[in-house]
Amino acid sequence: MKFSTYDPGEFYDELFEGIGRPRRGSALLLRKFASLPDGELRKRQQAAERVILNMGMTFGVYGSDEGHEQIFPFDIVPRIVEAPDWTLIDTGLRQRLRALNLFIDDVYHEQKILKDNVIPSELIYSSKGFLKACWSLNPPRGIWCHIAGIDLVRISDGRYYVLEDNMRCPSGVAYVLEARQVMKRTFPELFEAYRVRPVDEYPSRLLETLRSLSDLPDPTIVILTPGSYNSAYYEHSLLAQKMGVELVEASDLVVIDGSVHMRTTKGSQRVDVIYRRINDEYLDPLVFRPDSLLGVPGVMEAYKNGRVAIANAPGTGVADDKAIYAYVPKIINYYLAEEPILPNVPTYVCWERRDRDYVLEHLDQLVVKATNEAGGYGMMIGPQASQQEREDCARRIQADPRNYIAQPTLALSRSPTLVEDHIEGRHVDLRPYVLQGKGLYVLPGGMTRVALRKGSLVVNSSQGGGNKDTWVLS
Image 1 (cartoon, rainbow, N blue to C red):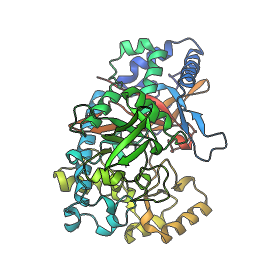
Image 2: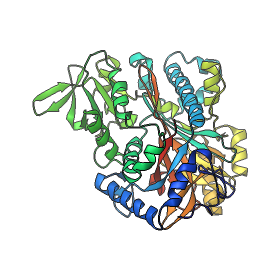
Image 3: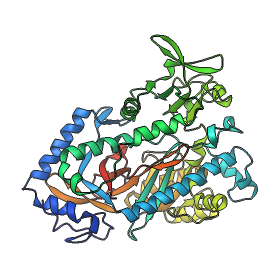
Image 4: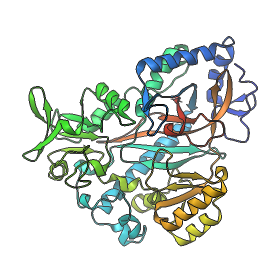
């Protein structure tokens, strides 16, 4: 496999500084790949895909013509993150989570940040993630977001930027755990040569985080899933299995005398902690959407009264709002009196007239996103869009400016990727996972999502993206 002629082009490349010039941390890996006989890397890729197939490592694509469940695309060339880079990321994520937790607690209590005019009150009150039902809630230990997945991108200056905060039900960590197992089977000799930081302690760390939400010595913990048709059901079942807890649906739970109980073959059993993988609006039909069949009637009352803990706490979605994301640097400064270690991508909030005017005049240069969509849905990439698509986008912005932000079209970093029988550069991002319980734990690495379509900047699995193993070097 010829890596010597690989051209990073004008993009920042994760493994190469230039043609034939590997980065320091990737030199050993690339020597190993170059020493393989012709066709061997492709054979190992195919072997990895068979392992993934046998594992049943799938994800769901809503509205797909090819069927609901698909094998998760995986690329055998790993991404390497050197120790100094990871130290910066780790420190920056801890700072961001501390500040965002203080922000969520504040907006549901004293609202000092609004009274001090740091963020416009209307922006908070008009957010779909701001829930009046969560006003004055006091989650256990004052922690709102216990599991976060923060999307990072690297651009041509080599710096990492935060692209998005995922504070409600971030998914993807199962693919991190499974990708590592696949790579260990495929290249065991490389793990002996490299000092790659392990990821397999994540389930035990997650269990520890969930246990910390209860004062009981051995609390009963469940994962609440929307069911097997959810796109992340594979992950829900894998985490339940690895933690040794029950995977339940709404029909398995009932509120009795103010407490949540799980129906079992031996009768009902009280539940102390719920790791919910459904969005707020479906959680309790008595409080939110009355037509929800995915939630548990009365669970919010039990939560308010301290009879059950829920991770993540209802209401955390206010920090997921992409318009509020634009204010996170101010949020960090306000609560911590610090400058952000990981900067935001420059963002235009269409709710503000000056920003909106700029966006409408520069649609051909910008990426426009709906503030409450995920998975790459509701996105318009200006340079790749047709004139008609830009005009349609402009009409949507003018009709509902609160629902849109815009960002420059970023030259995302690329990483060498196996395409059939040769290597090509593909754009990548990185989603590290952060757990917040008695302390903060940052999973070393996270999910590197790769845009498998040539030239594409959209890395989401729902839009044709795949996954690479991420090696954080000790």
